[in-house]
Image 1 (cartoon, protein in one colour):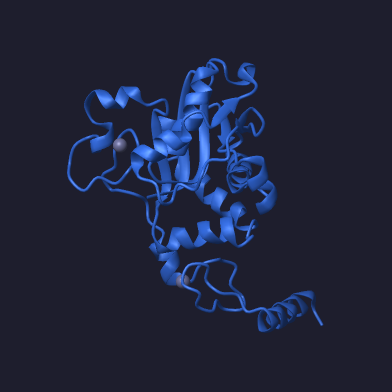
Image 2 (cartoon, protein in one colour):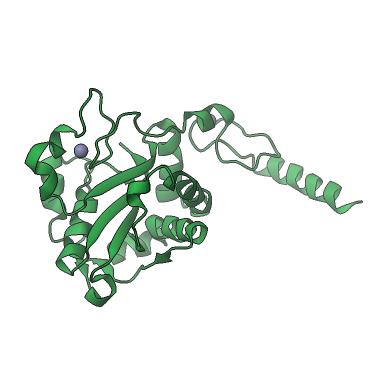
Length: 244
Ligand SMILES: [Zn+2]
Ligand SMILES: [Zn+2]
């Protein structure tokens, strides 16, 4: 039997034993699929916008350059000066993020990080970034999950981009409570002082690009940026897979 036929037979048997399903809607994928989403969920992966806040990247429903939270003099108060994302947070992007974070599908990071690299060129305002840093998890949470999903995304992303990744300088010093039930103000307070830069020499005068799976209020990114700026970083940008 030729190798290609044998390969196809093995794939069909594997598919019969362990049928693969779409990570977003759960429908069956064809046996020869080399994707993680069905066609319609794949089409559902859309960029945020078209109009986005020039600071935090949130989709704007009406005109203007900034959202309510970034408007006027408020824009200068943020330590994280730009947030941009590959995709809007919807059923398709949520399916991938949830599988990556909560179902142990760490292998998804490879493809997701690659997609982030492809979409990165849409944001020339981030091009000055010199060092990529994943948002760290608190050590006990990282141990429980077995990996930090942001670090996996950062590795895949930087491999494509040829940028340096630094996974050691920024640490989470407090096991912050889950943010899902907190409002915007509480989220910001929850993240204040939750991060520390242990190697200021690595960040001094540098433009840092924080990387995370999703940005919601931007509170986590702001907490990281505050620690990096306090350690002497010149500028802090953030780039996420999805934007709520
Ligand atoms: Zn689907
Ligand atoms: Zn904004």
